[in-house]
Length: 349
Image 1 (cartoon, rainbow, N blue to C red):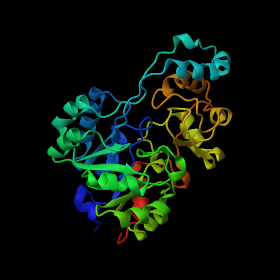
Image 2 (image 1 turned 120 degrees about the vertical axis):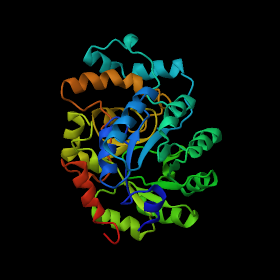
Image 3 (image 1 turned 135 degrees about the vertical axis):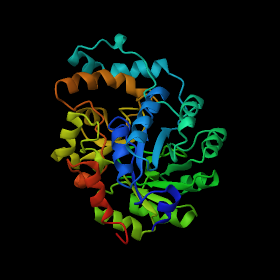
């Protein structure tokens, strides 16, 4: 039995990656009920919506589950940067008949704060995980005071050591192959980002807490390889996005099933922060990493109306179709069946 089974109280040491925008409580509940650790992403939720989804999870399973939050520091809006970015997007706005003056400003992603903590405390979730480091020491202490285990993502050895020094119970080693946002927080230099099986053994050697491998793991063979390199468990996300419990859009599902899914890249044009998505028109034309994009998460609002118009016409040209580099394990199966397939790679199973 993996140390992760004991730490998190799960039957199998597989974590379902929290995927904001493509899943809610249904997927988390299905994975937890099947013996893994289901995760609820809360970056796009209000505290009230979060509570509703946790209630749904608890209705469908008595097993442990994870509640995940971003913990970035919201930037001050920069009017000049925003105006220049909307000017850069101007030809697209004209194409879709969008008046930039009607686009509401918005944060795009909400970090963990006292309001979330107040709404979360009555549930005392078994596991709480974070992306982009950790919230304040006081908030971490509060979460641990409920008895919750705390996880967070590291993309470098330095980040892993930083997290261990601040009391996390386990570290998620996020390789470059992972879909969605990079969890990097001590640097914004993407040249420091390495693949899962390069990062994993370095992190395992550098820290004493259990390490969970993530990034490009979508088959039993990938699971087995992670354990062979010292992982206490694995976290998988993209592999679950075609499941019926996922809320991924029809456009996103089509992209994952297309030949285009073989082409992913890190881009900041959707949110302002490096994230891995399937390459599409807007990432090609704007450049994958564009220095003009507003700071995370402020870039979200300018792209949102373009995405809505394009998706209404069945196009994913302006959509952040998040995906890791290895969607080969994606199946349109119930989540429990995908999990059972992955479990074949766990030692002793």
